[in-house]
Image (cartoon, one colour):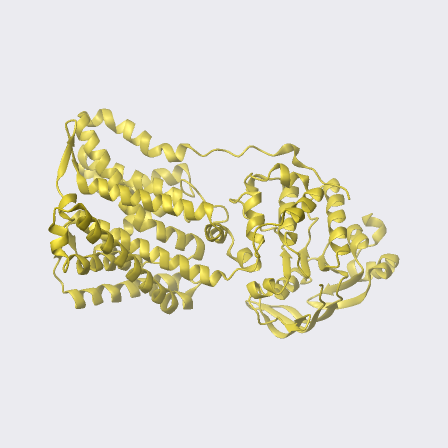
Length: 240
Length: 336
């Protein structure tokens, strides 16, 4: 079901700014790959470029067997990619139910899958008919993630899902993502919270100044505080 | 599996009923100044009819504006086009329109509305593909090109139909008036009110009860995310633009029959009013557009009766007051 993602020599320009400057990395199928880096390194741009929301000015992006770098975002989504943006981008004027209805492209929402989602996010059941804009930040994040998994997808692109959330909520999100991962879905996760990265990541790619500067196993990076300091300007111990 | 339940502190959604009540409040304030009950009823019903017609013309623009972020100053051309299409239907079917048969009267009226919807929708498709697509996201160019497009359309209408105003009258049974108490009520105003209300209900049903409606509402708020969910937003744009053009044409027919004449610049003359309505209502909000249209029409009628000189600026004053109270309109749409 899952498929791998490969970026080769990807460049992205936004206006006159050259953000991605030849990004090369792969996301192995069925694995969770963390995309780390300092603020402004180009992580969000990378996800948006993969999703087709910003066009790569050069380079190739392959998802499974298909080249997707020239596809519009709708076609990328239809190839099995779901995107959870950093801003969550939930539809505030729509109810929680309507947000999920919209994400269920293939037809009515599968009740079994919905119940499965409710096991992680009971708040969504409670506020099923509430206006999504009236939810708290954590609840909005739940809507955003639920929207991405309301139907099976082959690749999840998730941008800083724990940003600004309380620790109790983060724990639940980790459980949810772990469960999705167990289902064999390929995940590319941008995350600033190193504890989350360590708990979820199989692989890690580190970006700096629009380029990939480190490729390896997450466990290796988590075990090497010198490397963390060198790549990210932090040590894991300080982010427990 | 652990569960995350952080649902304890959800703020109750505020029910925004006050903006919807503003037309009623305005009517209640105006009533004692007007004095005569029959005059008040006549002015109010005339205002409601006018409001429904303006709403029909404006609702398409507010959706296109809200969703596509397109400043379409050519919207008035579709109002004029719809009115001309009505003359093309009424002319060969004059016998039906003059007949005492309600069926024939309704048939010619319905045909005119349907023809205007189809023709304006089709021209809307061409307008969007040729003029709007190259300038998405560029407001200044949108203003220039849509004004240019409306000038070309207006001159084409003059070239095809001639510079004279073309008289047009409602079907025989829709003319004249009846009395309700001491108030004289024009029949056609009731017809226009019914059509406008049906258009409003239909739009609300589509927007709130169908997936297309969901997509439109979501698209008004965040086009990019709709695209990222796998929907072709460009196709939705075309559909909304065509629907907006068709509604403008429908409103043009209603307005032409109300005023009894058609000319190519009528759409352009109404455009300022249409923009005031969608700004007052909140860009992208159909409910706000409905309330705004009725508010504008009622105040225009009351002011015309109570202080004719003030009537000239009543709409601008209304817009200023509403925006001071609610800077994003009566029913602002999130994300806009």
